[in-house]
Amino acid sequence: MKSSRELQELLRSLNRKSYPAYKALRGSYQFNGYVLSIDHVQGDPFASPSHVSICVLQKDAAFPSFCMENRLTRETLADHLNRQFEQQVTHFTFRAKGSGKSGLISVSHCGQEILCRTACEVTEKEITARFFIGFPANGRTINAPELEKILFEFLPVCVQKAFYYKNLNAKALEQAIFLAEDQDYIRRYLKDHDLAAFVADGSVLPRQSGVSSKPMREAVPFSSPESLRISLDLPHKGRICGMAVKTGITLIVGGGYHGKSTLLSALELGVYNHIAGDGREYVITDESALKLRSEDGRFIKDVDISLFINDLPNKKDTRSFCTEDASGSTSQAAGIIEGMEAKSRVFLLDEDTSATNFMVRDAFMQEVIRQNKEPITPFLDRARDLYKKAGISTILVAGSSGAFFHIADTIIQMDNYHPVDITAETKSLCRKYPLSDAVPAAFCMPAAHRIMTKSALGAPTRRDYHSGRPVAGEPERLKVKVHGKSGFALGKQDVDLHYVEQLIDTEQTAALGLILKYAVEHLIDGKRTLSEIVDYISGQLHQKGLSFFSEGGHIPGGYAIPRTQEIYSCFNRYRRM
Image 1: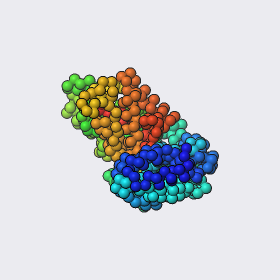
Image 2 (image 1 turned 90 degrees about the vertical axis):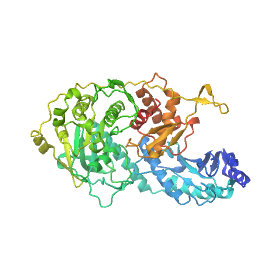
Image 3 (image 1 turned 180 degrees about the vertical axis):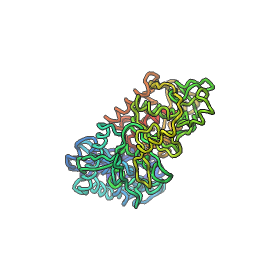
């Protein structure tokens, strides 16, 4: 390892040289209290910025033992430190001048949820922060004095203020760790007491707008119905009260704009821990919960949707259903079966984003179109068996069909953002409006052992640069290009994740691209099932993080670990598999 003084001398020797000479800076350098590593140097000042990391030893950072106690506390500490680092860097980005991205200092931006990011990782021995710097240039000529400002003036200030315990707000850090431990306690409580979710009294569920996840000012605070209220004694906050959402079938109803979808949105993001001040800190949902909706036009491959759709007029096999362009009903049926394969224990649905003919068929429609002429068994007829026989609960927002009242275990009416338990009174009304006595086909667990194979397009061959002819035995190197949060391209194939609604960050999407690329190149061999592949991936993520899936074991900032459910969703939408 070289010293910071050697870096300074090398940097000065490069001044006014051609931009590629910056590549000589790659390596690690010992600064006062930390190691600076220049891991990748951009090709020119207009390209993606250079990858840089710093490493601070725990003995120097001196964080107390309660921050290092377990994986949860270390990940929470990493999130807290990344937020502090971003605040510091904001004061210095683009203070150094030059062409293109010269002077940019970029750190992963954290939202309201806490994610495990490559931007900052904490182990018992050290803290590693990864970020990006635009190496300065005038045109394509190195401007070394400006980079010297960044590395020797700006960066040391940011590191000292963000990664040393003595320079941080100790109370704020303690509160962040304690909040995470309280949230984890509630998650474990849900499992132990057959609950699907918990919403604390006083929670602020509405957001500022459709493009802001911050809490709405002057919003109506949540207040649980007395019949559904429970009390919990948290390790740090102490006693807290709120609404328990029991396992089974829960129906959320109410007039338009009264808060039905707002409650469901809070529950779907309750799979993540939230930061203090978010308003949803104590909105906790079963960590495997999956939001489902119809997706017209999505790709489906070898999914057994016979639980919901059978006897198609074209004789298409629904026990191994394939389509390049699914309808609303077939896409939603496939989503449920894929969710079962992903071991989700709770399904979240909103009638507004579901296929109407998939969800329910009223008595009049059943009179007109007889059961033997209708290939769809609606979700209404399967929801009870999904819970009784597969152990999967449903939380459903309904605004137009009263048929779901008959199967619901709990019915919550949202009245001006206040929940009211109307289960008892509604059940008495159900007797006046009986459902059709049509009997659905028997419930049979769908097959969930799909062998993963590549199509002929799945492993394109590398072509010779000059002749354009395929080179035998040499697969093409796939590249990942991320299209924001809603998807990415692997090679020439787009993976559309627009309707995977629990993806909340572009860095999760980037990680899914990295994982899928690794699976296509190393795991999908026509022998392993999808479940075996995802289980292997999940195990490696838990043990080694995302660096396992990167080339050469080097992983830059800009990635966040997705849930297992989103890994399944990604694989299921890749058309070359």
